[in-house]
Length: 269
Image 1: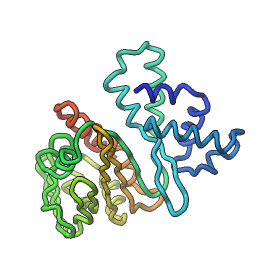
Image 2: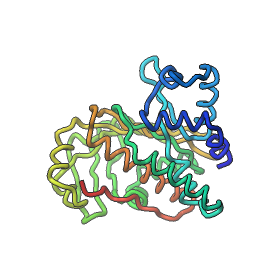
Image 3: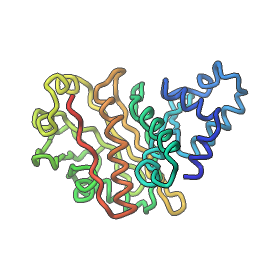
């Protein structure tokens, strides 16, 4: 957390976070516009923010896009917040709330986190139904071969979602996993108390996909989650922005502490 506090301690870096909070997914050129800072200075500040895991980056053609990452703020709030004075707690709480309440615009969700575990155990946590049920509240059942169908079983009411279009796209053990996102059924909506209007909106959207990239980094594994295939204004993307940080926080907590932390269920919409 030292890197996080050092990164947040500079007003120029806080300004860059504010700019991304206003509009996520900006290029270096866009972030430099109107700041009165040299391009080289902005590049250095962004490198510090990325090293502290406060921002993530993704390539789109020749452009490098920058996104906010709420993982460090979540970790401070959930694990170490009691160690700091009240004024700092309030400041961190305000920043955390501002970051999480701002949906990520565009057509994809990108999230990076570092977990103290091994690639083998992280892979098991992503693919073993017993693992996913503990931190996610769902069981993903398949043989994890490309093209194989995935059956999703919800902890809520034991609802089962099966669809031939729910399939494994890529499967490289301990390195990369990708699959199409699940089908939104009436049973799924009823299990979480979602409205008919919301169900109509999400079922009208094209199917998206999620990809997990695992990279060993010393005694931790860098996990990058990319969920894409959305159209602008996607209701599913809005839910993904809210849901994945909670799910991945539960995954990290389970692997690092052994204590299950179930992600929050979708809110009524």
